Image (cartoon, rainbow, N blue to C red; front, side, top):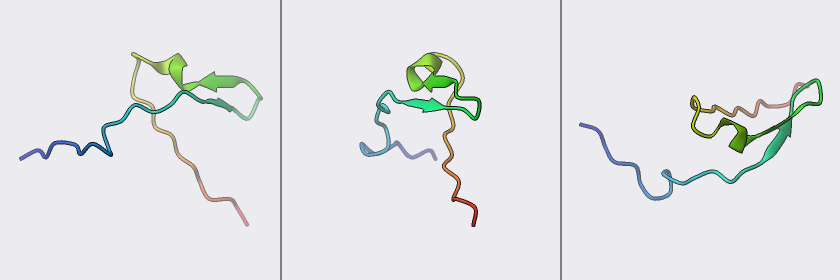
Length: 46
């Protein structure tokens, strides 16, 4: 049985801008209506 999402989970993410390693900017809104976006924040290397 599938559980419905609670109200804290089913929220629209705010638009934001990130740069790739080449310095090109990407906005979350650039991907609206396309494939799902997975954002991963890896821990820094030490």
